[in-house]
Amino acid sequence: MTMFLVLAACGFASSFSLRLIDPLILPVASHFGVAGATAAMLSPAYALPYALSQPFLGPISDRFGRMACIRICMAGLAATLLLSAVASSFEVLFASRMLAGIFGGGLIPLALAALGDAYDMQGRQVAIGRLLFALISGQMLGSIVAGHAAQTAGWRSAFWISFALALAAAALLWAALRREPASADPRAAATFRALYGRVFANPKAAWIYPAVFIEGMLFFGFFPFAGEALLAIDPDSVGELPRRTGFVLGAFGIGGLVYAFTVRRLLRALGVVRMCVVASLLGAAAYLALAVAAAWWQAGLAMLAAGLAFYMLHNCLQTEATELAPAARGSAVALFASALFFGQGAGPLLFGPLAQAADHAGAYLLVALALALLGQVVVRRIVGR
Image 1 (cartoon, helix red, strand yellow):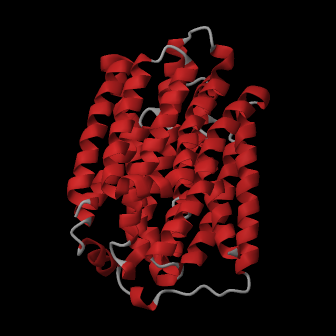
Image 2 (cartoon, rainbow, N blue to C red):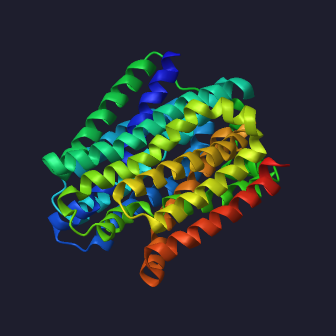
């Protein structure tokens, strides 16, 4: 239980740092004198290196020890958040976010793999659910606290808060592990090629990874443009924009918490297959609601529904990923996270041009249609088999 709590602290700190940048886009753009679209690239600047690091970190953890990798990554994340807090230029801030993505890439997926090592399938569902609470809380508070801090004390204060959380988690982790030597899984003493061969020997792998990529792209492509969308709804809200953006994006996390508290009832009432169908339709409805939102709080309610839909669908895929290859679980789960964050990184690159070509409402309609189709693929090719 002690190690679970330490992993939860690391996951919370990592999740907090992940979503804190979204409410800061416009304040950062104003501070450094760059375009809003340029500042929005700070979001994929974290997500893409996070994704790129996964195919390497997963097999390394399989071979040399899960906890040793997590410890190094936690310390690295704290150092890069400090660099973000004191960045003297937009270029330095951009580079620090890229480095943070690399180190952040070793935390959540490897913590999930560590739980997979420690629990059987039934116990794992409970442990992942508990860890999910810490992860969602971090994401939700990251957006809310960052928006509030930026408005009251400037955008740098959000990074200082995130740095303090990461430093505390790193200290807890190092203290918990100082008497426990890192150990590798003897079954995984193989090359990267052999480890990934075990993963893709399971035919579900060919469907799970593209599905989670598309899921990340559809659900998160809107996030860096939330401030821009809220400004279009209420052009006179510039003074309240960081706070409102933080609350709207934080509502996505609240939807996740609703899922974490009701997952047993949802599974009992719907089952895995029907839950995936409901999730995709609920996600589609959420983005349709964004298209007609006339006030910021309406956008917040839509994002709450989107968060519930995402975690309903994502946790089903995540649980499937932990069972793709038990002898190479770190590789399987890390590649899963890589696909998700490639999707999150690609989402803004796709959503921005769509919003310019068809305005935000048109982009929301396309996202809604794609989410409805994604649910059908997940049911027919992954959870329904």
